[in-house]
Picture (cartoon, rainbow, N blue to C red):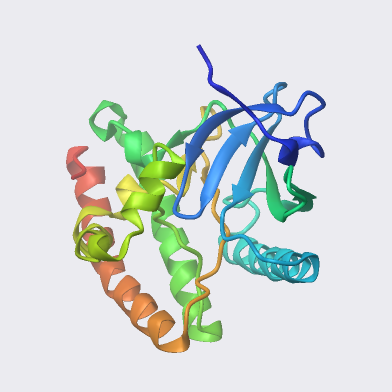
Amino acid sequence: MSELHFDPLFAPVDADLHLERIGGGNETEVYCTDDRRDVVKVKQNITPTLPATLAQAIALRNAARRFATVMSPRHAIRNDFVVTADRMGQPHLLVIQPYHGDAQPLSSLDYAQLSLRVRWQLASQLTRIIARSVAAYAKRGWMPDLYGRRSVSAAERAALNRWYRFPWRLWSFVVQRNLLRAHNLLLTAPPNRRIILVDYDPVTRGKLYQLIYYQVRLWLFWRDLALIALMFIAGWAP
């Protein structure tokens, strides 16, 4: 049985203000509409005023457009941004995306059950996505987050983001997460089998943090390329 959540935030997309929660990320709660046409993402980094929220919406819209260009139309999806308010009148930002109910996150794929031909298709797409991301960073100094992080609830996300969980987050970032187990990349159903990016948030921390973050990502791409080759040959992914 689906779990419905009531919130006045949903007024722009749902008449009875009830949506089903289907997931959550590092700073986002994710719901889907009753007709299964759209995903509604509620951003949790609340800004104090309407002008600040509008500025955030514009910044995220521009980032989404940049990342969609990097990914190319084959691997990108539509992003719409809506500013709404909660029951206290606090402004919030919603991100509306098409709902791909038949798609699977790469994190849940059983690669051993896929044919050699399908594994080659996935390896080709992932290699192309890596190449486009590296080219974007070399030219512009940024690239999309292909990996992502999942949370079961808002409470779990808050717990994972506490300062004393930093060693765990670092271990997860460097060791546990790889492109074959990405949460931000979904594989659509046959016959298209497109890998699509569903998270278009930029890295918003300071320049030094971004420099270190992207440099680590560049090195980890070499590991990912080795794992992609192993997946293609043997159907195995850690």
